Image 1 (cartoon, rainbow, N blue to C red):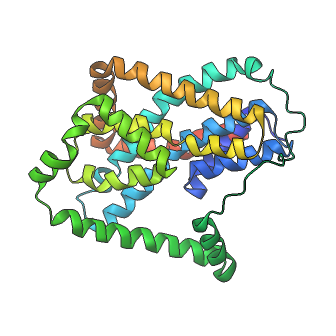
Image 2: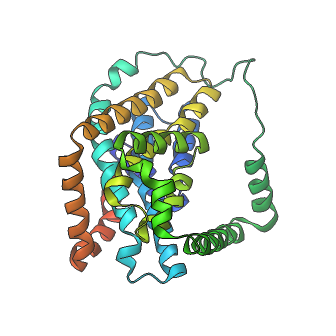
Length: 306
């Protein structure tokens, strides 16, 4: 058993290793249903999975740098940095408010939660079945290498596709909707909620952003929406595991994240300028950029070791 702060750091770092915050959140729920972690640690582990999830976008940006030969690594990972800043601006307040409010959520009884009810529906997941079969066949190491190869190939194909499209036409016909902050926020929320993958919804726009097809002020509300929508699959897992307290905790994180995001959008001109200035400063100064990369590991490691 670890402490609350260690649980936060553990899930944060685990998200880096697995490059999937939703998977870490689902594993946290599984540990909770097995009575291995208390509600407070479940809450912190779910929030930690969101704080670490921006590393996925940094990872995709780094591969895009290798694939597309952009000018600098800092340029290709700028969206990952932006996502990290946006995510923390939402989920750090969520962490504080939610953790202090846990006694209200904890009033829900966990008695009998570990055994799924007779009405539980087991929906086959073809992707999970296929990937599990591949891992069983070739082993986790080779499977990871295959996954990395698929990312590289998909980015190359995507790069060829968008290079064949006129930039102005693309913005005029397909991306102008993102100029409205509420539309952009809704698109990010819905697309991520439907696909249950923030890596997919943000991964699709990484090359577009890196090449200037989408402006920073257009993508920021989209990222805020994606950060909320990615909790939908975690909520589904909590329902499937038939854990009322787990459902209440995930719902609390989702609602607090949504409220925080909407509040920030209400002051978007000021908020966008502050976040944009911080991102520009970090990307422009090598010392700040290296410090940011180091902090990605040291901060969650510090929580884990405290």
